[in-house]
Length: 514
Image 1 (cartoon, helix red, strand yellow):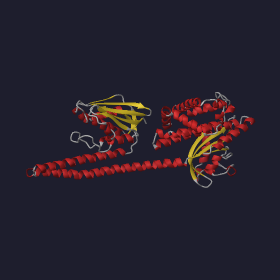
Image 2 (cartoon, rainbow, N blue to C red):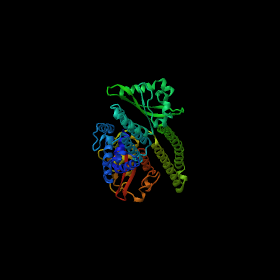
Image 3 (cartoon, one colour):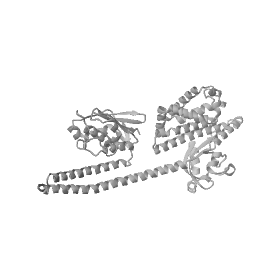
Image 4 (cartoon, rainbow, N blue to C red):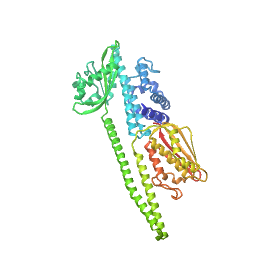
């Protein structure tokens, strides 16, 4: 649960109290008998809030440590064995816990937009949350079914709880299946999803929901076999409603055994995730289209730059030939005009090459682990002549391993170091590079002792072709920092600068850990 772990860490460190407030707000809108228990009612709002903060903090830590499901099992076991601190078994209905878990999930999802705007990451986290909460509901359901078999007296109470819990989970089809695969119970969520009324479906085989292709491949029997062997089977695929409409189902089969270890049947929980499936498919399609579009754009930029540079080279050559052949016949103005034209075409060629370089940042390339120590050594080696010529010093401490595009991150550092050397002050250039971890990302800084800049220019320097200095003294196209910004954004990070005139500049940028 890599994405969910990152979300849990972020939420615990940045929004724990806000998460607790939202969780309590949602719980207060629900009619949960447990919240009317004297032990809870006697608490002040501040005490209830403090206990909620502590509880949610433990919950988020359990996600970080991969113990969330195990903790739920232990809590349910304590309830089953009447060992819940401060409460007797009769005080708590498992339906209460299901409602509390549901409120918890709704509160979690509210904070997703604070954590990330990446669609892939959002989809992954929602999928992981769904898996966790469906599992917790399945565990609670399994315990209730076990309790039903213990004594005739407890059967009635457990059945009431089971019906309450199952009926209230309207978004899920929850029903029981006998050992041969025939349906023996049916909740309202199953009616809503599949369209069959209880009297229409009881006794039917679960294959009624499967496509002809799945039936030919014996998928229903396969799922029951896996559940019987492993105690549980997770399955996704197209299922068919009463009206013939197909939907994408996410299902969990849980085997039910009696005290003697004899299989008595299966509990099945199904959720219609057609909208999520459609969104994921559309995202994949858009990603492919973006990849193709970027490849075509890069190819177009390459061809265009090649086609544009050829005429420029020809114009420059002819101008230089005219200057050489008719030098004695040209006055000073003529010589100057030819010089201006040659200089202009040369700068245009550099500009076209810079545009090509800018367009290539968009390429979609799988990220890979990058040892920033090795990368910086390579960049410094590439800049060896400029460093030596300007008597510059480039220093950096221990660097992390990050995930990204090796070529682009190398270009990012190279552009920033080149700028630090180019815009030097009266002293020899000194560049200091550092990195530190903050939450789930690394903050890098590139500090120099150069000419610096005024505060009103700090936002403008990342705009393409934006120049602050005389091009004769500081040559270039004004595109280098725009490329840096685009590279950082390609890695879902941010870049900014702090600077003072004649005291140097420090460029900061963030790169996510993974």
